[in-house]
Amino acid sequence: MSAFNPLFAAEVIDCVAQGRAPTVQELYAVAERIRHDAGMRPIFGWDGASSGQEECLLIRAAHAALCGTTP
Image: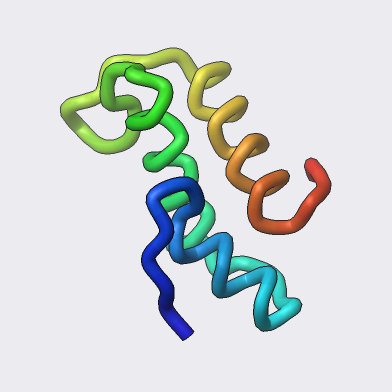
């Protein structure tokens, strides 16, 4: 199931609709979407110069969006 919604990433809709845990790829995709929507500079990959703390916070936010809780 894939649905487009300008407010929610498709991965969030899929995980909630299917009642399942996210994959690692979904976690990073949602973290990237949060980063982009917040207007932050890229932090994942070789072109991103960021602190580990920024990446950790984005991953936690993505996990909360996908699962409703933080790890």
